[in-house]
Length: 334
Image (tube, rainbow, N blue to C red; front, side):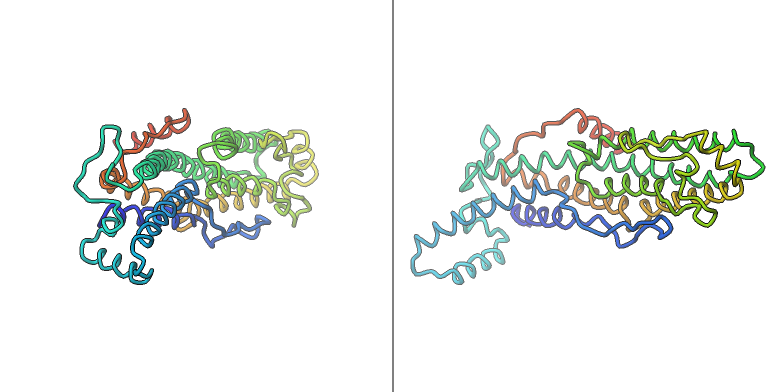
């Protein structure tokens, strides 16, 4: 395949991996449904490359047509298709490539009609290459943390009427601390300019588990309005879970069996929400699979892309990307 064909396949792959979402949804008992949607997995790459391609090709076509007054668009496209069938390199017809000239000392392919646009395109690919790897590392950590939260929810099934109030408090406090560690680890990564900002799989994971804690239907059959009636709630400012021990004591004193039922129901629904996020063909595995595919595609074809379009500028790594990229490289060694 020609470098142009490789690049076209890469752009198609990058656009296609935008649908990391899944038709699966969280249990109805959680009081909400995760909505299927699509995210632009690499808007930067897709938009910039599309602009560069359109700009260069339109200029070239205009030049060809102006120099060949008797050639129609259809005739010209036929020639282009014929060239692709014979040499598998339609760029040669447009004067974009001769397949023989090496790169200049500054990393440009001077045989191209517009070497600077091609160089900038390769710079985008270089940057997204390391970004995808860093995101893969972060999403892998998120997958592990979600599995841990699933276990934390399941542990609440061990709360029983035989336990004293202090032991029940300890169980709920332990859950709250694990949940807060999850928020501390990923809230900044997903919000603002974080590495996973705009990543639907990560955003949905934070939202889903937050809503699971807030769900007012847990314990409804026993007269409770969710875990907030037992003292466990989410602070609207910090997004952290807090446990009001006095409110929990009051709930246990008035209706201990009902409070325990509510805790069991909450734990099961929370664990189910976490399980769905990590389940096959759902948000987190889909994102990881899509990242893995585009990473390996770029790695397999990067030398061909650089030979055709130039070396591009090396990626500039933020501290967050550099740290996650180092973790990704460590994964490869194990």
